[in-house]
Image (tube, rainbow, N blue to C red; front, top):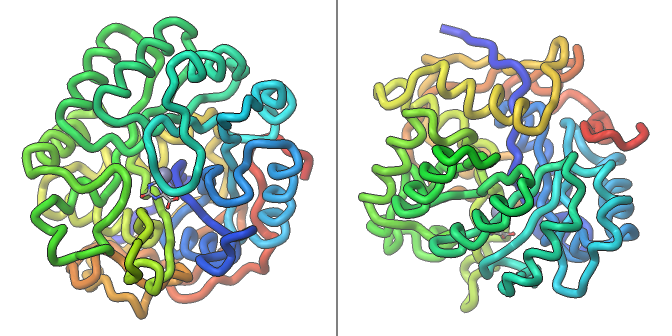
Length: 357
Ligand code: DOR
Ligand code: ZN
């Protein structure tokens, strides 16, 4: 059976390029996005130079404008050196503000609650704040949401305890949404040994009980979005003595979710909500005409590195048998991917957040 999914969005990717173009480029990773079925993907600010100033933002927008083959958005980043005076100007061109509240790849980290408060107070209410917050840090951020009432998306939630905190916050009526990544649904600490450094990411792999709590929250509708946290690093870097955190995911998210449909863990309707309807609603984006993904639900395949478009050329899911092949991706009336190749030139993609075209 074939299905059409309108306007898929991955709101959590680290596309690299700029000073990290040896890892991946906007051209290579937007190609991976359309191969994964996506209409639009949103890029995080931690690739050097960090997207924390107007010049850095302009450099990234220009590079995406000339290279992207899918539509896109970018986050502005909260920086330790106070950059809040740039927020009003930057907000119009971006999908939101990202605040890193726990350590990860890059040097954007805000651990001081008074500093976090300054960023929350300064960010315009028209755009969302997306947060990396693990365990008790979730409670710190909820205190800010309660105080400033800024819409906040909790990225890559990975534990049963975090889910419990966020369930209570939703019951309280706080304006929050929740994202979960496929690697936290399909992999646990038990896989860490076999995966070695290819299983290293932030937040890290958790217990089977955490994974089960995530599946329950995804199936019940508490979780709003499945996001890849696509974070390509070269195989040489991953196999080095100090491997960086992060795994790719743009091309494996949809087939992994459709495997869950086949196994009876999720309904097809829920998958469409998680990868398309909910992100469009959260980021207030329309369903564009003739923008959809055609998927063959019955096509099974084994995830192999040779098939991937991402420049990093590996996946933590290699060897897994999944279902659901992207046969065509359409954006604004153009077929951009035919199941094997990208059909549009670099620069086809547009910023979906207001920047003058
Ligand atoms: O594992 C991760 N890698 N987690 C993040 O939050 C950042 C990302 C990266 O940029 O490599
Ligand atoms: Zn991330």
